Length: 71
Image (cartoon, rainbow, N blue to C red; front, top):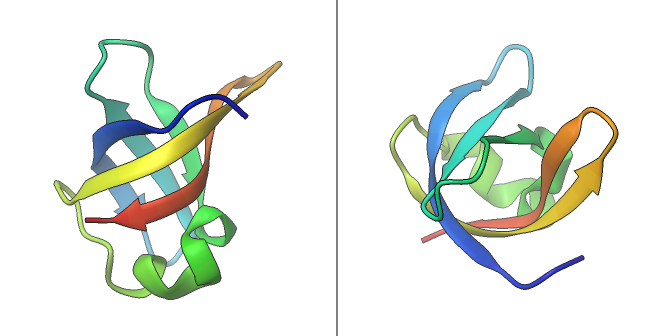
């Protein structure tokens, strides 16, 4: 994984347990799964627009957020 990035939750569905993070560096949005939140704690109350810090893992499907922390 690369260095940590900052962004905000573009949208997150608690029902579907996934969403997307808009990255502040202008790169494409990163997919985020419930399991990517540190200890799954932040995902329980994460809301659209919340600021986050995270690592990005490149995948064939596109960037995927890992080790997400709501700040």
